[in-house]
Length: 209
Image (cartoon, rainbow, N blue to C red; front, side):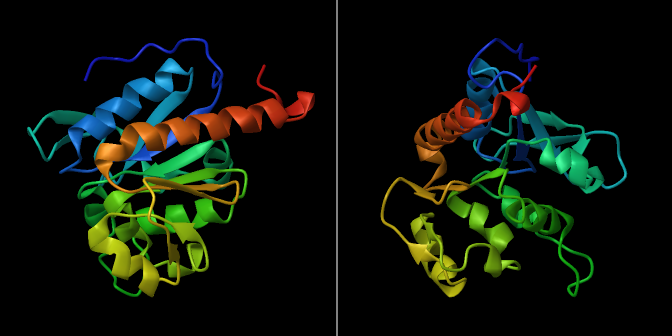
């Protein structure tokens, strides 16, 4: 992928983390890569690197390559809080990232997401089959309004969430969910608007330099 140049915008200085793995949905991931940058956000794609410096993943539709070099296992609390949003995309990304060698331990990606849900200052975005990653941490969405792919409605209800039949659903001020990867543009628009609103409401002492 070509390097994306940041521009000044309402999200200038904000950091957005997006999880990535193989069998990603190319139209969605490539859209996020450019769309958030258009608003000035610094976009980071996090994955499990398995001790390597970089891994090339391949998309589901056209096997398009995507080079990932940021480890989600190296995210300490300070770094996690530096992200304005953490997004779990559609496709097989979450299914691959929920693998754990020890079934009595959370997968690193699930553990990261659980920590993100404990931080109200981080906007969480889950779309389509992204809910697979939450299967081992159902308490994060129990009692919350969400939308997901039709194939996962039973799953989110079993997690204790309230399914809402809408393309995009906002619950509280820190959770945005989307129906499918084909709704990525609506999902991203809602995330951008909420992030911009948060920055507008932030005290002057917390505004970006």
